[in-house]
Picture 1 (cartoon, one colour):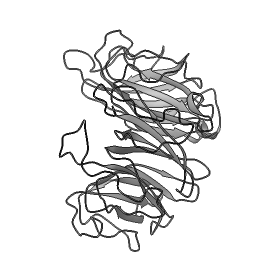
Picture 2 (picture 1 turned 90 degrees about the vertical axis):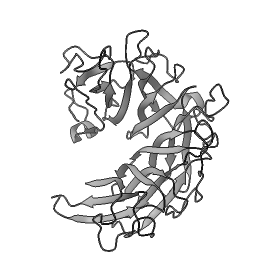
Picture 3 (picture 1 turned 120 degrees about the horizontal axis):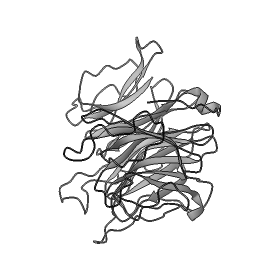
Length: 373
């Protein structure tokens, strides 16, 4: 098991020979919080390695992936101008104090992407990822070649994009500021080249939390959007936003250019027109047939469920309390319909934040599909 997150503990459990054995970028204080990367042995009885990862300000690891060699890839956010970098495509911190729409003293973060060697003792590469405003990394996946696929949210108009990107510029709000779009970025195995990088969003804030990649290097992302003009595709399951905040599921093909790189894109949320209810997607996986599995949370009584679903009625949604239920949804390979969709929750708040698929789904397309949530 490979784990990342944030720690404020100066006595967080570490291992000899780990890359960073002092919190705060060597400053000895964990007051602002460092990211950490920890590997447990298969029995969960001891640490294979455990290291801090951070600088003298706030750092958090939000996603982790592992390649076939056992190298760990971490994504997150940092406010540290001295965050550890190596072989970086962006060695310099882009943030400091954020610009509009944030308050004048709001601290600004960059996303980061770090690849640790199999022993956890050194950085293969580590880089900032961002522009002049707030950038937040939230999800990461790795393909069989070792390319890293990263997603999150950016308010930076100068966030790096590549020629042929689906959306090369952030959508501006009515004040002429970046409205806050999600980003999808692919780094080559050495972390030296942007293979693909694009904005994706509408005229209100949008952010991605989960990302997956299939064997053909197609990218699947989910998150939340406040935009009624979020990019959707013809024939997608839900092309209209009925509520103010919806989840979304988008599939991208980085080998294509411009509009052709968006394979499909759909809202996922309340099906009742005029709804004010919130739905957010937090985790995503993809099987060998190209079906996308999404989990998240919703307060929408009109969230779509399938006939025969485990739980067709929300346990806590709607007035008067508007409590969250978790949900689990499987889309067909075209993104045009639901294989199944169910609420998962009780009478108080419930949130599904992560999903993993078993090996029969990842490697073999079977009539009966199972997801572990």
